[in-house]
Length: 370
Ligand code: ADP
Picture 1 (cartoon, rainbow, N blue to C red):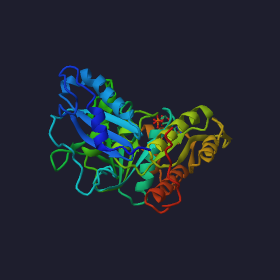
Picture 2: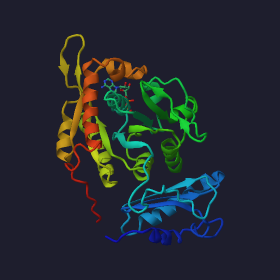
Picture 3: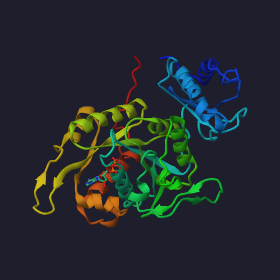
Picture 4: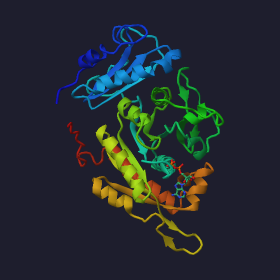
């Protein structure tokens, strides 16, 4: 496989011209923050914010030009509202730009919680996973990257808005049940629907990662939007992810989508830490009978088929719905319940994996370029 270098990327970008100004994007000094890590390329095009809509096709062309280079696994371009500068790369001195993505200073591990489709309880699991990690005495943050339907302010019962951090530049996130929480839901009003385009999603994710005073944290849990889109790509390419957890309900149709998500993370070389089966079965609080509403066990079989760990199952229970929708997540408010224990058990498995206890057991995913 041809090795892809910054030089090759810049050469490809020299063929991309800003139709209005005539010059190519490199000569115009628009390219910044170029990062090439094992075939994954990301960069930004610095523009005047008022041109964002007009220059979206340029962004796509630039992205496609880079993606077409041999040896490029994936390419992401975002539009940034900065003035072009001669050398705007902001790689911290300890990072090697060719081999590492700069992490978040003071954050040990970043874990994404993802699902193939909406409504499977991904946010509920993300919140309770974060609380299960906190129950182990870890310092935990919870980032709601579901820009399309931010639910963490509600689920975690956060009343406060982020404040200005001591450095005067970043946000200081509010804290709920001992967990730092950040969400686009804090910054946008409930009433105005937000319409997101690719570069805006990438910028929002970037801001919530680097524009928030997360540190010091042992683990940052990230609630992704459902599916495979810009937020997932941005996250995977901007920061080193310790891994991704996939949430699915047991029925085939959900599992099909879950597999797409799983494959995306594998392609991006993000370790898949495992699958959680949510709404696994229904335990009737009145008659005590158990019903396999969505045919229990599908996610466990999917985990076996795709060779990832099965992390656990959470039943469909009104107590989970009520606590999660009223801002009193069950792991924090009913720590003696069996559901809280189930979430803590999943959290223990996740932490064991990302803290390196099981290092070496997992075979790293391979990328095959056809
Ligand atoms: P997603 O993030 O996948 O869209 P949510 O976490 O928002 O899903 O969950 C969707 C709805 O299902 C919410 O009302 C939530 O309270 C409920 N829910 C999630 N998991 C469970 C569960 N195990 N038992 C009962 N209700 C659940």
